[in-house]
Image 1 (cartoon, rainbow, N blue to C red):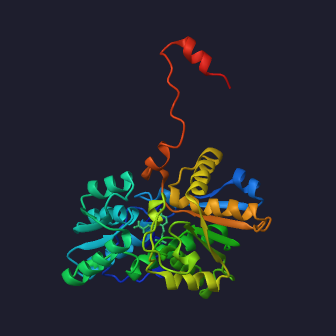
Image 2: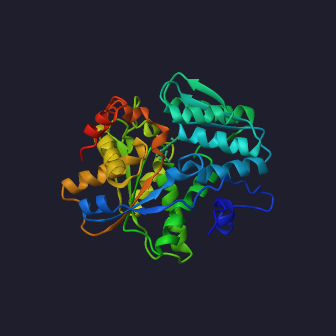
Image 3: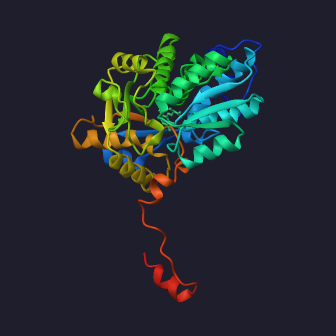
Length: 349
Ligand code: F0G
């Protein structure tokens, strides 16, 4: 099957009219990889929804394509968002594809280099706000209200609508939902979208049960695990460095109706998981995306991971977006003289 993009593939399930431009960068239809080595280690059937292979390298494209198409349909003059990085890259790309100006507000000094480069190169007007993501989002909401720009954060219902496609693709491919779906949680939109996607498929009879949804946060930015908002969230997984998730209520409901749970892991556990995923399976995901694997390993160590269940882990963002998170923590390449003798000595297995 050729890739057609979310709007064409799920036309019937999305709120499209004949006036909605059929925007596409061929987002979606990402691989569902079987992670055999890690699965064996954990005693489960482990699959990864590799959403880092979307056009801008993250799951955000699934919802952004619809949000920007709708902004065009509704005659918006510009789009605006706040972002820890990936939303801004996606908004900037779809803004460029749609020919609509894009403003992005980033927490100054807290965005991975790849994501910043993307937003700048796709031609967005990038503003680095002195403050954290939560403050940047308050300002973006203000801008949308004051200047009649379309806000394309996940507060925009079309974003979450498009992101339901992740759940649909998984069910379409497996012909049934997994036992568990585990994903990182920041602003809490994606877990809410997955829940809505699975619930919709159950409503129309495509599946007969919901998977249990597990949302994973970083210890230093875990408002949903702790049960209160965090004023100064801290984690090296900058994508999920969020203290006041706007979709907190929806996310709590998602976990409740599916009998799931919120979990948190340390930055060190995230980095260990990132390395295990890369060196054990050949898959490079950004730190935030590795929080779920870290949580599964922790549950296993605590004897809380049921044997033999099928678990889908959503790899939300590509590892190439944030090399700085790892480059100072791994051994640098060994330098050798440009001679056969030196090479020969180094080729010991
Ligand atoms: N994983 C990655 C790679 C992300 O970029 C984000 C969120 C999440 C997980 C969490 O998803 O917010 O729906 O709970 N990134 C947003 C951004 C906040 O601005 O790019 P969520």
